Length: 114
Length: 114
Image 1 (cartoon, each protein chain N blue to C red):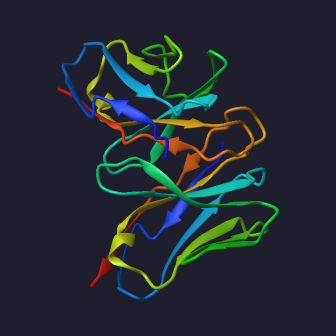
Image 2 (image 1 turned 90 degrees about the horizontal axis):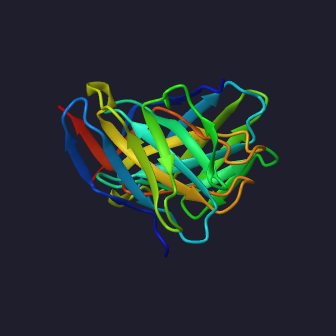
């Protein structure tokens, strides 16, 4: 089955600097890659996603890149702010069957230093 | 914005007891999911549900687990005889349709089995 690896497990950056979180997946049939943000005591919230027919997607300060050949995808947050502090999860899904399950990475705890 | 709501936020139970975790998915969503996250570990897929039946389940979802949509709004996860290792955060999610619709997660129920 699919396996998603995520690095680093913790990341601390200075406010205003950029943060990059990297993930790899094992199943080349995966075609949908969402990123979730989990704040303390809350459920995971989708922040951005990318499909396998696209190499890069950007939404304001957040961007995601996908390298299908290498089976890598990354989350980039620029001009980080204190409210970006959270745990971020990457995930992968095949998306072709009904109710396709999403396989999550192990999470990255991002801390923004003031 | 519509939300997935879960109750209770925290449930403490004794080993061997039955628990029911409740979820109200977003009203126009058709696919429903349960995930769990043991402390310090990945978010793991348990089960997906569509059209009043299980679409897919993981190896974790054994005979001790069941799901039900008893009425038009609730989606429940029942654990028949809880074990210590069932202690985790349980997240309900729903999505609008099958083709890579974003999953919307609830805030989770923290289950503690003593």
